[in-house]
Image (cartoon, rainbow, N blue to C red):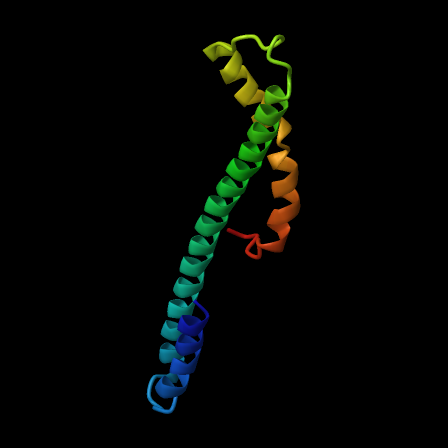
Length: 117
């Protein structure tokens, strides 16, 4: 995106040397630059959303692995068979316990530059 924007900015030097219709040329060029900026903001935000989703999944997976490891450490005589409902509840609780919201809120400001989109 940086190269595309630099090329767009440099293109004004090719357009402005022609004396006729400088104001209109500049106006049209600015509109094109704004369109490109808006496009790159949207793309940036799409990537951020995807990255934050992946981060949440990773944190959840870590919590699930920790829970599974702690369950394996329980002596076999005390192990009870876990049914689907209990497993589903455990997974949901791990998702809440992974604190993804807190982590994402603290990570996101480092990547989120476009606050007006």
